[in-house]
Amino acid sequence: MSLLPVNATDLERKLEQSTQQETLLEQRLTTLINIDRIPDGFLDVLAIQFSIDYWRYDWTPSLKRARLKQAFEQHKKKGTPYSIKSALKPFGYEVTLVEWWQSEPKGIPGTFYLELDLVGRPLDESLYKEVNRLVDETKPASRRLSRLSITANPLLSLKNIVAHQSALTSVSEPKL
Image 1 (cartoon, helix red, strand yellow):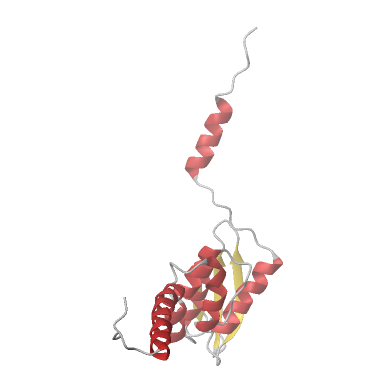
Image 2 (cartoon, rainbow, N blue to C red):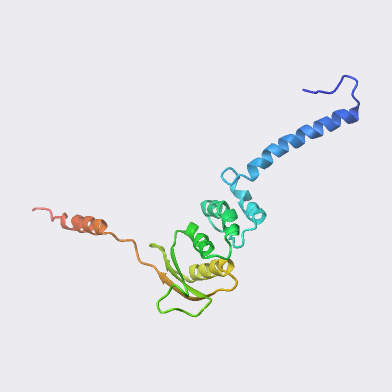
């Protein structure tokens, strides 16, 4: 529907058409900045726009979305112990960060150490490098990682063991 008068020139009509197309494009662009609604193929572009320090193209879309959602908070608190913990959180790791003044005996000033529980995930060299890279990019510039302690305990509970034992004991030989 045109709002132009009947005697409008061709130039005026073409200008009106171009502004209508811009409005439609603008509506599509709002979808491209919504982390939950953006197509998976555009997540990498959004990471550049959000200035995410560490990004891997082979991550799953759900992990990419989690990193994008925390980007603003992470930039606000970059260089704090919180930023280190939040950088590792989307991966599902449990992180304990202890600064030099919190340890017994007191550590070397300006250092901290991390205790990382992989919560049943396997440990390999790429994971170790990835954790170190994330810590280096989010830690305060004046701090140095003195120790990284990684625990890779499998998730076992007493209930699973009992159920497993029960399954083993309930097997009986067929009667002849």
